[in-house]
Structure formats: structure tokens, C-alpha cells
Image 1 (cartoon, helix red, strand yellow):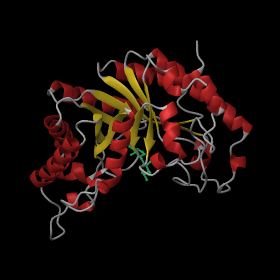
Image 2: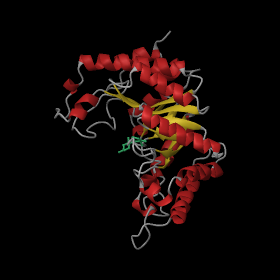
Image 3: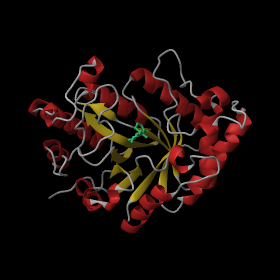
Image 4: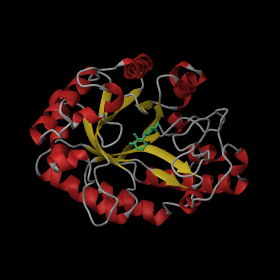
Length: 335
Ligand code: XIL
């Protein structure tokens, strides 16, 4: 059987988001067959790594790093600065008042330096800053505590701290809803400003949390074209293709855990979508060096029961038994 990593040798790495636990099950061996790159789904986020100031919890991140080292897989680091899964202590002092900008940046520097240094030998690329651009067309930056306290400066600082800790690591800005022309324009403007200031940024990460209905081909082509002009590396960092978008927009109530939700029509639409997405990834192979799936198989996806409706999703290339789906064959067989 032709595997994903074999089919795409000479194109780009094929990665997957994992937990430490999954690597110890049948999924560990499966990953070694299909993938050549890993991302920690949660284990390297500040909320897990430094839940209390100065108290680090390395257990899961270390086990993922050890698996990558032992098996010669690449490892993408995710993520150093984000508004979610970040402990409140970053932003508050002992009296529960917000800290000032200087103190916040000091804490960020300490965190980034410690984490990047620890995984220097194995993490070759970091999602340094995640999701700071707003989805609201009326504002540029997300109004997070990072932004409220430090303005936009925390963004360039995060890159500088990461670069100081590991000058060889590739440093990425990562975001979702990149297929929106409005949001994309804001991301691109921000990155160009960083480049102009000489900030060490080497790549843009497109999360690619997509669905059977979007992006359509023209939209994806425009997205990849626009980002490719930055002259940076492009990584597809969190690919999945939801079969439910329409329903959860409509807030319909759906059966909770029934595979009857995943109809033949949906599987066919998903196959068509995956086929087109990978055709375009191949078209932009000069720029795209890594494509990572956000989870291994339909056995478990972060989209299950998220966010509005209580329903499972089926967004990946493998079914619950780790068997290839129709979409898989369209992705590996091309030309
Ligand atoms: C998600 C994880 O998959 C979930 O397990 C967790 O509960 C929330 O975060 N964008 C990102 C990822 O950059 O870190 C998110 O991962 C999915 C959206």
C-alpha cells in the first residue's frame, strides 16, 4: 500500500497532531507507517507546560519529543504565544491586577527561552505566535490580554525571544480562516511589517480547518498565491475537512454519536474536496514544505462535539479503525 509519506516524498512532509498517550497505543505504529512529522496537539502549549509560574510540566511534551527522536520524525513546536490555553498568571500580579507591559514581556521571554531551549535538538519549526489577527473586519488585532497590555509589540518580541533561544529554528506565524480575503490581507500586512522591521520570521502557517463546502478551488488558489508572494515558507499546519459546517451554522440539533450522520453524499463531497486541496498543495510545492493533519483518524477529532452542536465529525483520511477512506486514495494516487 502506498502511504501518505511515500506518496509525497519530494513534495512535502506529512505530519499529524498527537497526544503523548496516542503514541503508546496502536496509533503509534500506525503513525510511523503514514507520517514523517509530528505536532503536539496540546502538550507544548503554555497552559500545559507552565500551569503555574515557574512550575513546568514537561511529561507529555517530553514523551512526544522522545518518540520523534527515537523514530527520526520531524517535530513542529506548537505554540509559544496564544490567547487560548494560556494560564491567567501570565497577565496578573499577586494582587490580581493586570501586570504592565514590561512584566508581561519578561514572563513571555522567560517562557519562550525555557521551552525553545529544551527542545532545540528536535523541534525544527515553531508556531511562535498563534491567531492574533481578528476575524472582525472592523479591527486588525484580536483584543486579547496580550494585546490589551502590550499592544502589537508582543508579536515581534515573541519572534525575537524564540530566535535568541534557537537561531536555527524556523519561526512561523500561524492562523485560521486564512481563506477569508479580508483576514488574509490583515495577516499579510502584519507579516510584511515584521519583515520590514527585520524580525526573524521564516514561515506562515495556514491552519486549514476547512469543510466539504469551503474553500472552493478559486478561493484556495488565491489564498496560496497570496501567501506564496511573501517569500516565506508555507506550512499547512492543522488540516481537517469537516462534514458538518452547514449544520452547525444553522444550529440544528443532530444525533450525538451516530455514524449515520456521515452519509455517502458527505463522504463523496469530502473526497472531492480533499482531492482538490492536495492538487493545489502540489501546485504550490515550491512554497509548501509541510502538510499536517489535525488528528490521526475519525476515531478522535477535536471537532467532535465542538463547538455548537453535540455531534461527531469525520474530518480525516482514516476511519475509526485506521482504515483508509475514499479520500485517502484520491490523495495518494495522482498524475
Ligand atoms: C485544539 C486541540 O485540538 C484541542 O484538543 C484543545 O481542546 C483546543 O485546542 N487552533 C490551534 C490548535 O492552533 O492549537 C487548536 O487545538 C485547534 C485550533
